[in-house]
Length: 299
Image (cartoon, rainbow, N blue to C red; front, side, top):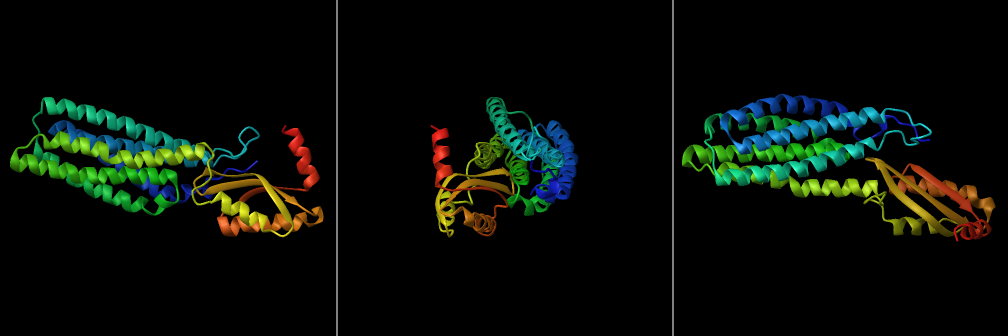
């Protein structure tokens, strides 16, 4: 079994920043929802909806860290480390569904534009911009290390640009009386997050399908293993990601002389750690006779 322990995951290292970002997001979300209802602005409500999703995403990220602290069991040999990946998957799906709703609401407002109070709308959006910039600053460092933090960062980034869009819309309504700016900006906020969310969704799916990590070239890895002294063949080679910052590798090395197996194993482990950054390594050493027996069993 592989022990749990959130301290070893990339997300856990940024738990404090996630908590601060969640506190800021939740506090402002309430103000923005009220502001959107009072002003009648779809752009502001769309931004509020993203803020709500941010809060949910941050809460899920912290929940995943909490689950990851649990020790491994005979039924879950990796513990709950995959909770981070499932959390990121939930974030991506919710964001895509939210975008569909925003686009539908924008269509409705194109048909019948409501009255919008641009002054309060501008004030609420300006405060939101400040809050989003602070949250982005908190999450920027961890976004390159953890899928959960990355998902939260993208959501806050979309909100920041959304706040800018709401500010622009409020100025257009205030100075030009162009009320259609509100549903246009609202739809734009919804569409902006789609490419980034789609990228996150593909990354999460790749991990759940146990695909090879993008930073590992399997062909290069196999070639380097073949270069180990005494190794004659490599087979059943697998590299996958358990959670952000935790890659694993397993494989079989065929050696000409089993008495040299210990040296081959030691070199393979060193190579995985130094050249590919993989610490969790499982390597089976075998000779041609054992490989032939395996081939018969697999027929």
